[in-house]
Amino acid sequence: MVKTKYQLISDEIRSKILSNSFTQGSIIPSETQLQKEYGVSRHTVRQAIALLVNEGYLRKEKGSGTFVDNRYLTNKENKIKTIGVITTYVSDYIFPSIIRGIEQELRKNGYSLLLASTNNDVAQERVCLEQMMNQGVSGLIVEPTKSNIYNPNLAYYLSFKERGIPVVMINAQYEELSFPSIRVDDIEAGYLATRLLLEKEEKDLALVIKIDDLQGKYRMKGFIKAHEEVGASFNPENVYTYTTESKENVLKEMIANLQDQQDVSGIVCYNDEIAQELINGLLEMGKKVPEDYSIIGNDDSFLSTSPGVHLTTLSHPKEKLGEVAAQIIVAAIHNDPLKSKVFQPELIIRDSVKK
Image (tube, rainbow, N blue to C red; front, side):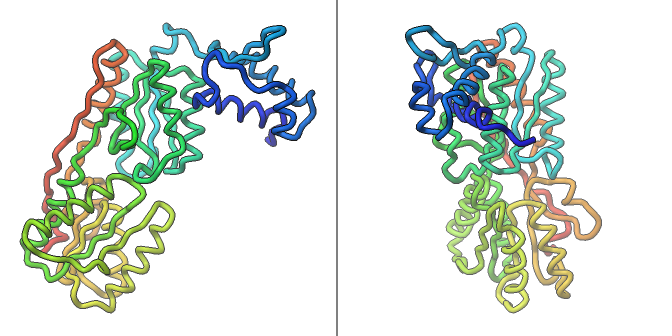
């Protein structure tokens, strides 16, 4: 359904209220100013304002102007029973297990879950955050979107904090914010994977890593730390970096390069998904794992034991991580201090690394 002009204007003003660009109690621009800004008639502006007044975002005071209001927030008694959960994905990879852990813990404490996903896209994240604010959630569990690059939605998170709504991050965090996080030690994960291959005396190692998420940055730090510790060097040409959007192209490039190279014998992968796709590509061009390449994944997902070569990988306490996040957010609602937790990964040795 195509939105009308006044609905689009009301959407933008609502976003500014939710992100605190228009703060509680402040006066918004006059109807004349809004007319000029949006290039519409006064009637259209008045329709937009009327809609927001009806929703409780604005209030009109005769002779004074139109002010930001907070009547849209549901009362504490109702909203305290719902926790918002925003993840990058919902049905893929390790996320069903994390969500299951959150849901089970919330249910035990009498809370319901409002779930949304961003597909690792900041525009979708903004929509999710506005949805959570509109629904009046009493707490928010979030997996950050593109956590290793600047996020234009940071002001929304501060809006939750100013309204007394606790926020906990999972798997990563926005380094610009001081919110607690529940995550795995990704530097240690990258270190353990790399150290294992270096101890196997592989000739040269390659790294394929995601760089728009903070997990990738930290796992790369672990890769470098392990080389530094044993006094080894690595070829920067064997470090393949990708983003959410460039994954497929980078994998194709990497597989093509490996076909022509003889020096690489071990590969550290960002996660199990990348590792399995890489193995499939290498097998298609006649290579063998682990005979030709030792490969390590990460996250101990269901993909690590799918038919074919079983992956050596790093542990990830998926359900437990979800449970702990839910416990912390519920405790925070009852005025306990928010706190972070870091899980230590462990190597899980299977068949994708030479014995």
